[in-house]
Image (cartoon, rainbow, N blue to C red; front, top):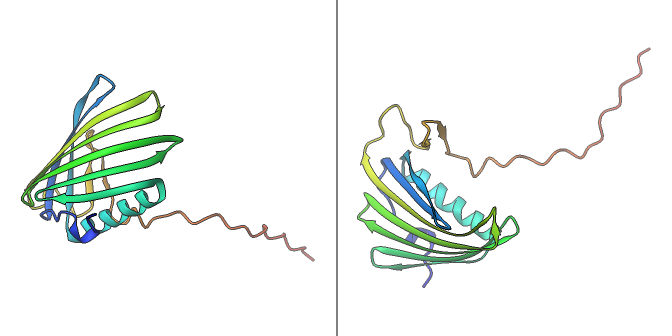
Length: 169
C-alpha cells in the first residue's frame, strides 16, 4: 500500500546535519554538507510541498513502508527528460536516516544519463548557532530560511492595460 502523508517518517525537531554524496555517470562529486533547523510545522510543510511538486511533474510517485524503510518509485518529466528514480530511505529511529536514490534520465539531462545519490542525515540536538526552524545553511555557509517557500508563488502579472495619462488643463 502506498504511504500517505501521515505515514511519512516523523523526524525529531531540532538541528540536523546532512551529507550528500553523488556519483554521476562515473564522476565522483565531493560530498556536500548542509545544516538545517526543523520543527513539526516545517516537516508538514515540506511533505506537502514535495507532494505538490510530484503531482505537477510526475506520472508515477509511489511510496511504501517496509518496517523502518520507505521505498519510493517515481517517473517524472524534468526539462524534457523522463527521469525514473528508485529511493530507499532507512530510518534510525527519529534521529537519523540514510536515503539512496538511483535515477536514470532519457534523454540524458545536461549530459547526465544516470546518478546514484546518498543523503545521510543525523539529529545533532536543539537548534543552535542562532538558527530558527526553516533555516538552511548550504555547503558554502550561505544561510536562507525555507519556511513558506512553497506558498511563495509569484502572482501572475496583471493583464490590465496601462493607465492612460490624464490630460492636464
